[in-house]
Image 1 (tube, rainbow, N blue to C red):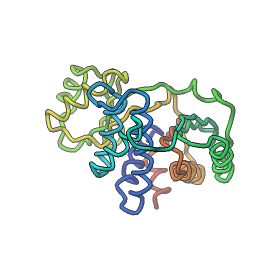
Image 2 (image 1 turned 135 degrees about the vertical axis):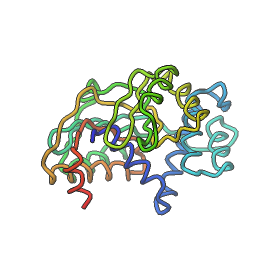
Image 3 (image 1 turned 180 degrees about the horizontal axis):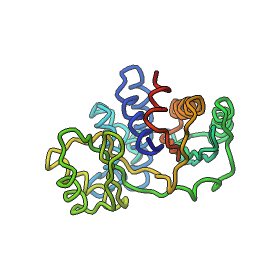
Image 4 (image 1 turned 90 degrees about the vertical axis):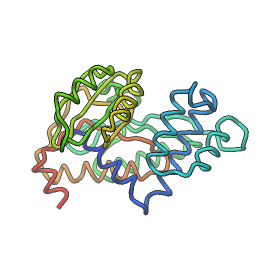
Length: 250
């Protein structure tokens, strides 16, 4: 399973975990604040804000909490000023990793993130060291069970998707970011449930990890990065075959 789709699946399962919900909501609130600050508080005129609010709703974030975050972003309520930072580096097995963070103190976050990488057998690199290996794309996955592949492909391509392929037990739809909302809306209108729907940094090529121990170290590193309060998203180019992932999960 490849780093982009498989890790997205793990992330969404983690987000649904009640024990982690407080942390997930805190991160999504930052996402909303930054989007509202940058493009205004009207989601119909601010696509980034609409996307942030949709992610918050998918994580069952209360409506009043969402509204409060929007108001903090527009300046109607006082709030901290967050800036976007991208950290790049390498994990076990030489896999490339990109981390998107929102921080109110980059002098604190950078050394903390460096420690997370090193503690789990990785190393943080200079800006741009792995960014060229990724492209910004819309990613939507749909469970393959009970779905006609050709009908779904026709719907997705008709709505503006670039590609659709089978990846394990899901269909993986990719598109340019500008087409993401249109495809998502079309699938919603046709009552096609989506497992993952996000704009992500997808790897241009993947690194196959055949060793279970290396795979375990990579997954542990990715989880540790995601657990950091300032990390919004973590992307990698690892490709762990299902039989190897089964050993990691056990």
